[in-house]
Image (cartoon, rainbow, N blue to C red; front, top):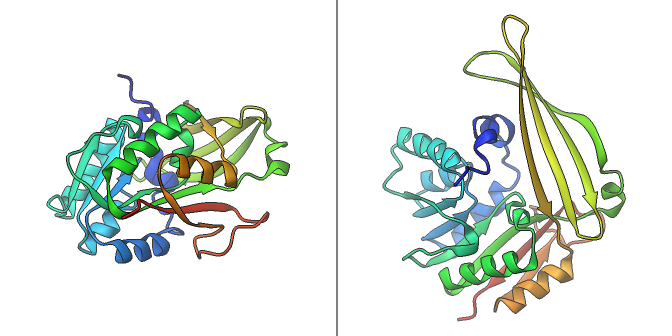
Length: 255
């Protein structure tokens, strides 16, 4: 099977590895629920590593072997392999022997599931892997229709990065097109690196995301058997409103 995120794995830590806005919130739920903890779409270990340093027992699942290999290297370098298990699986067909007190899906990774069937399959597998009373923490972006109307395929500079291995500058562009009827966003990341001799090396990473609205999300969670505790609008757990950037669901498997 082709690695769906292999093309972007080497840039992931440069792009998102320093994101920490959600970590305080995640630590709060980790403290509430305790080990063991499961992170789906764990990537290169951005969330796994700080939790493992604090003594939690974790399992990280991702569909990308390239992402998991980078996570494995970082975990081994810090001597945390005894606390973190890494598994290559798809959350839609998740099948692990363990059960967990907390399952988390960070940074809108759940939005890579493009149909209701895929979303319900994943939620059903998550439910099965939670202990009774266990918590699902689901971090999504709150769709802004005014902003989505502007997604017409324009190419915009998103970030300037420096490759620590080569010292060369990387320019990350992004283009987005929204299909409002299907709630699908087609995204392409374009990463340009200028080689020493002036030759341009370009990496293209196209992907799709399906955004959800609040009551659609609540209905999906209830249909999968969860009790919805709260829907928040920020990592500070503010109430969700029309100006919220995030849509964070806290759902519990009944005891």
